[in-house]
Image 1 (cartoon, rainbow, N blue to C red):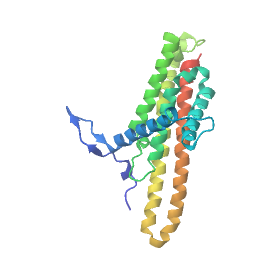
Image 2: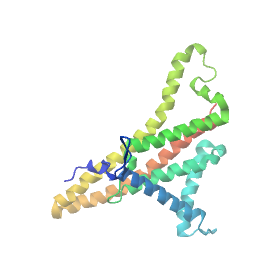
Image 3: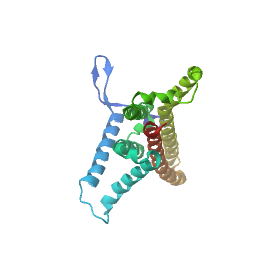
Image 4: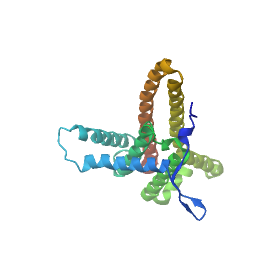
Length: 241
């Protein structure tokens, strides 16, 4: 049986080294590029393609996704958050394609790696801080010492609020990476029994098919959760006291 952890190994496809730094184009890079390309194709179908009041099949999918994301923004960030919908929409599509494409044979699940998801989560945090500073100026930094808190408690409150802020990308990253990693390991192990058991492998084959369906569900749920939490953090920057 193949090692179930082999599917997470990053392999260079085009080796590139500059000044001692390895910036090779890897299987993870390829998966992310494909996620961006498919996202652009999906957007092109919606924004460039011919649209009608009664949506066609090609129009229904991107339209439903777009409506879902707008609903998430309205519910968690209000009408003010709609101006930042392109950013949230991009996060949703990127994470969704990263989660789902990893279930395809010979593809790479880049959302199972801390480096990829962590970078996305930190980018979201920096974007939220930029929005907060843009809307409130230096008053945004009151989040580290909310109004009404005695100045004497600053040495205690400021570190707590700082840790709370920095924990946001950490929680986003760990939740998504853990779910994608565990699910794929389980799927790989069960699929390995299909070949090893011969005729009796029909049982793990059926179970493996059920796990794939469950993994699709988990991939969509984790995309939704990642998007909702990103929007909630954005709402703190827009509507926070």
